[in-house]
Length: 290
Length: 290
DNA sequence: GGTAATGATAATTTTTTGTTATGGTAAATC
DNA sequence: GATTTACCATAACAAAAAATTATCATTACC
Image (tube, rainbow over all chains, first blue to last red; front, side, top):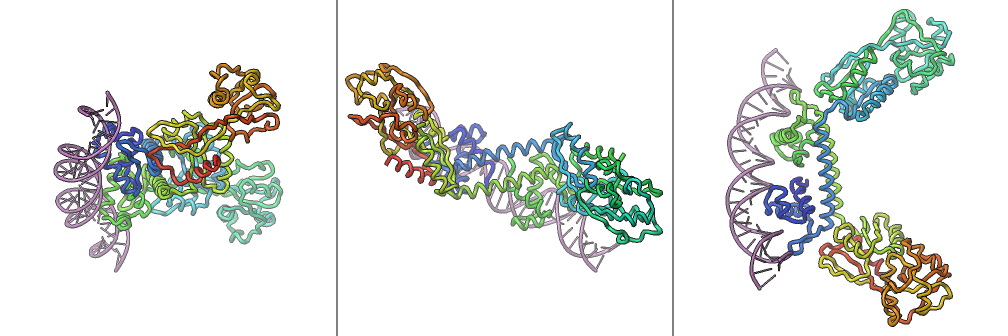
C-alpha cells in the first residue's frame, strides 16, 4: 500500500531534482522530504535514487515508481472531477428490460443519444426474473418489468399498460378451432403472453398451453412474424413491439372481444436514488406507454 | 489525496457489505471501519453509502470510488511485480546512435528480439551532441558516439574503432587533383569524416573543407552512394555502414596509405547503472566492432 | 579556499490513526 | 410481539505516525 503523500513528494522531487525546493513547493520542511523518500525506499525494499554527492539519478525502480505516480495523479484527478458531476446529460444509463421492449426502446434511446452524446446507454434484454436479479446485484440501475415485484429492496413504479395482440395470417378466420389448426408460433415470452390472452378470450375452450400444437420457435424477435406472414401459425406479442416488424401487410392483428393488457413497471433499488441522468430516460419510457 | 488505507477498507466493505466482517478481514476493529468510511466521506464531501437501517447501498459517488479503488489495486500490484523484476530479457532498451550506426544496428536488434520477444528496443538516430543531451535528459539510457565526451554526469566505454573509407566511382584514379575534379558528395556527417581522412592522407594539399567543391548533399543514408556510382563525386563514410548500400559493384573503396579510424564509445549516465536488460545489447554492440 | 547551500539524522512536538467502551437501533428469534 | 442478538455510531483515550526543529557533515559554487 503505497502512501499517496510520500508518492506526491517523490513525484515533485523528481520534477524539481531538489529536496529543498520540493519542500517549499509542498509547504513542508526539507527534513520531511528526506523522510518521505526514505520511507518509500524502505517500504518498497529498493533504492529509488542513486545519490552522488547532493545530486541524484533515478534508479530503474525510481523510474517505475515515477511513472506510476504520474498515472495515479491523473487517475485521481479524473475521479475527483467525475465525483463532482451528477449531471443530467453525462454518464451511462444501465437499463434492463424484456426483449420486445428493448426492440422498441433501443431506437428511442439512440435518438436521445444523438441529442446528448455524453449520455450513453447500456440496454440488456432479459426475462423479468433476471432483470430483478441484475438490479439487485447492481449490474443495472433501472429495469422495466411486467410483473409486480415483491422485494423489500426494490421499488416499483407503474408506467402504463401494453396490450397483447393476437396475430394471425392475413385473411384468416379467428375462432378456437382455426387457431388450433394453425398452431402456435412460439418465442421467448410466447407462452406467457398467449396464456393470458387465450384464457380470457376463450375461457371455455382453453385449458393449458400444451393443448396447442407448437409449429415453431425462434428467439430472433425480428423473425417471429415471418412464419405468420406465410400462413404457418399464430402468435401473441405485445402491441408495442408491432412497430418493429416488416410484415404488417401480410398479417392480421385481431380485434379482441376482451382486450388483455400487461402492466409495465419501472424497477430500481429502493435505497439507491437514480442519478440525475436517468430522469430523461424515465420520462421517455413514461411517454412510450402514455 | 485519497488515503489508500481508507480506500482499502472501503473496497472490502463494499465487497462484504458488512462493517463487522470487514473489520475482521482487515484485522482491525469495527469502530475503525466506521471511521475510515466517515473520513472518506468527509474528505470527498460526498456520501458514499446510502444507509438504511444497518444496511447500505452505494451512492453514485460510492460506485465511482469503488471502481477507482479496484483500478488502483490492480495498478499497484502491477507496480509491485514490475519493481521486483530487473530481468535480462524483459523491458525496453532505449538506445540512441548515429544514423549510419542505426542502419547497421537496427537489423541486429531485431534479430535479438526474435529470440527474446519480451525484450523491446527503441532506437533513435541522432548526431553525437543530441545523443548526449538525450541521455542526460533520461530520454535514452544508452548512447553510441564517436567522440570523447567530457561530462562528469556521463560515463564512456570504448568498444572499438570504425575505419573511415574514401569512396570514389569505379575505375577512378585517386590523387588530390582527381578528387578536386570529382568534387565532394556531402551527407550529415560528411564534413566530419572527410576532414579526418583528408587531413591525414593529404597533409600537404588539404587545408580546409571549403577547398572542396561540394557536388550534392543528401540526408538519406541509403542514397549517399548513388551519385558516386554515377561518377559524380567522392565521399567518406564509416566502413561499418558500407554493408547497407546496394551500389558496391559500381564504386571503389580506396585503400588508404594511412588508415583513419573513428573510435566508438558507449555512453550512459555515470550514476545510473543500466538495468540487466542492457547486458545483451552491450555485448552485441561490442561484438559488432570486435 | 572559503562560503552558502544542501541533504541526512536525532530529538521533540504535533497530528493522525486506531482501540476500548458504550449506547442506540435494526434485525432475527422465539 | 416481546426479547435477544447483531450491528453500527460515537466519544474518550491510547498508540502510532508524521512533521518540525535543531544540528551536523558535505558539497557545490564563487
